[in-house]
Length: 285
Image (cartoon, rainbow, N blue to C red; front, side, top):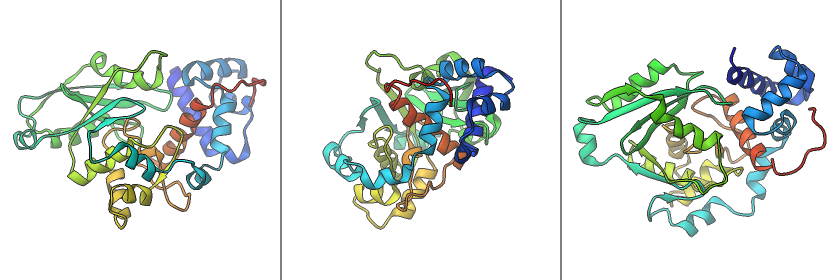
């Protein structure tokens, strides 16, 4: 078991047992290393301590939806969803496949792909010359299945493995630098409504949540919550299009394309990253 797999296993264990508040020794034993080594390994790969991650898991995240000082609707009005697609805190440019590209079914397009280890699990990344076109966890869906789905969307494209070319899509999330982030392009295919929903997801700030009905209202279609949910579930690019920030109006977690436990893990990791600047005194859970 490599270090990334060990960290993912530990985080999965903490997600499943958050209500029991497992201590450092218990989690370390679950991944078969000493508590001291586990503490250092976790901080190195996740960027936060196990204690910080567990604290984020145990927060009543659903209540944040009701008490957030800035609603998604306010953000949408400020940014103008009907305007350009240049977004926001991540400097993400979302571009839809053009009608001509769709008609040609990817003819002449070379798509590179690779699989990368992350603290949250192995991720499959594929990109066209115009940007990332697919990114997803492969612990619930195999690399072969993801390639098959991608080939159905781009049937006349050619596919080549190239981890060097796709690595930046993962490093930009997990190996953040203090320098201003470079613009990152996403090249997606979907219906007009799906594209609108995915752009709306990019307006949700890190560490905050929105409901399906919030997004429906932001799009000017307040009765389309179910359709919004379907579009969120069809998100082709994990993490960069943050569908993990969408929950039910009641505060319930809701579904996730890569599994509910993975959604809790991603939310807790993201929240803990934001709170990492607060000093910790203890080095144990």
